[in-house]
Length: 61
Length: 146
Image (cartoon, rainbow over all chains, first blue to last red; front, top):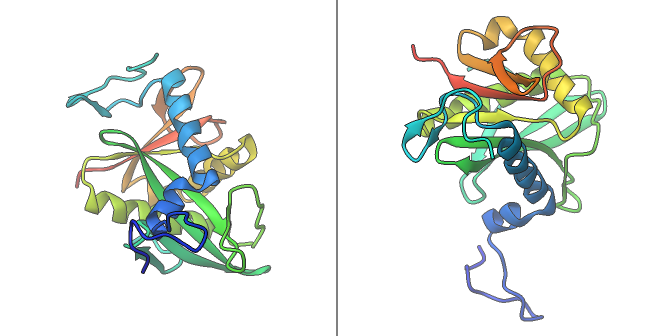
């Protein structure tokens, strides 16, 4: 398994499998789309923000 | 468990993997949870091209096993919720067509889903309890307390 700080022949860091998925453009796009959606729509009721459960539509920006 | 395909949690990648087996053959699926806020996670379902290693959320698989796939994702969500109690999972399709696919699959399998999950849908600027036949923009899912 690749070490976190190892590098390939071209000197680029070798990413772990988790890092590759976390940085994959498809997953990044989906994560950012979800964040943008919740900034607009607000969180569903029950989601904890700073330890406090939200009510419906709370945390809208 | 709710049925569906056997899945595997890949600890090294922190993703879930299963194979869709249908009319188009075997398609490797990956399910990934991304934290949006402290107890809010977004779930993504993508196809993995095993030759290139690339993932895609834009391929329409049409493998004839939509309900099996949905129930597998639901089982994976249950598994994730057992590891991380008290979380809320959001589900959004990558486009309106996929979101509608989730909605129709939820409705078809409601008998299995409803006892285990509290499902909300987002429509007209608000969250409401899931109702069949409504075109929601997104869904949120919590595990029901037994």
